[in-house]
Image (cartoon, rainbow, N blue to C red):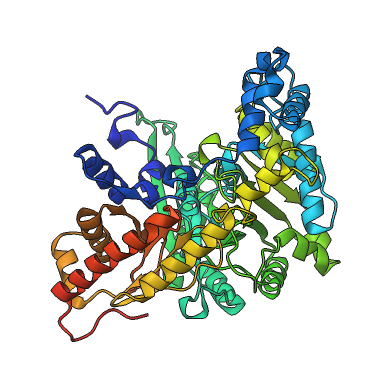
Length: 552
């Protein structure tokens, strides 16, 4: 019997190519161990509330009232909820056409998009147009929508930083595009060199040409009973000039045959040159934690102008900054500061979310993207695609509004909000606590044998390099595992710490890392780092032969 449509053998090959290490082998093994009763510390994903971060009170109060609007009619509602939460709930309900259970516009509620535009204007010093802002079910959904518009086939390349968040590699594979890596330099605190960018583009363009010589259809001869015959020529990734010459010669021959008396027909010859069309930056970096400087952003934007690339700015960690030397500056602000011709020519799409920062509302799935210098007809097409899903998650849109339009001095709930968000009267303000945890984790890793780690300037992760001894690499090979997967599995089994191997994000050949969040509770951090250090020392003692280890 022929395979059915959803049998594995019949699946879309692009689906099979997708890899997503954050929920990969390590996570699945951790889940198994948890079911067996082992205590697991899930540091594999930036999921703040799952690791103990408390939700901010005011946003939850507002959304609770929006979800249960009958409470607003209760004469005692003021005994349970502060007046500013009640007023804000009424405001957001007035923006809907039937409460949180009704669809919104496919771009999101106009009133919330206006609040996002005002937030961007305050942040960057330049006005933003709400009509160019789309609310989405998390930033990831927005990234996928835009990449879907950029990628037309395998001949389209997207520049992605390595190490990278696997959302990008997975989506590019799913859409049938080509990932073009550019490597961040670990010894320069994961810095970016524009010369390396140019080299990545040159190498991508020389990677080859895909030549598809369609289908040659031979109908019945005028005086012959032969059935139609279909011959398919598919020559792929031709880099040798001689082979390419022969391919083009065959194509010309087939095309000429279509004019003879036997009525041979051929589809058009299609040449796919690998065309780099977009560049991704993640600022602050995931998994690397670096913050891009203004000078670096200017170089990137200038490069995009020269290469005619759309820049995709993943800025979801813009509130997670743990040092003062390089504050977050948006790509859009730098672009506008550059003036003409750049500010009117470079295409930019920026992404943000309620999942990170001091909100940490991952499960709510709220995000947005803003488009700069995108033609109106293209915006209409993106709107059309968004309309297929009818509406983004409406409660999440309320969370987004609350994040970009926070409480102000003088509001009843303001002081509590500030205490929860920052250090104020409370030692455990979210952002200051994360800053301390970033330092504790960096220092802890750097105290370990054969481990080096750059300081986490921003985002939610540490990405230490593990200098694996040759014997450990050989043991991994014997076990059929990638070396850093082997190390991370051993760490999981010994300590219950669930991480993500660096190979899931991309890394230079022969160099190994792991990614862990800095999100475990501050009071638990010393014990976690002590447990890691004990495991690592024992692992190195077992496998190190004192002849050396992998180096950068």
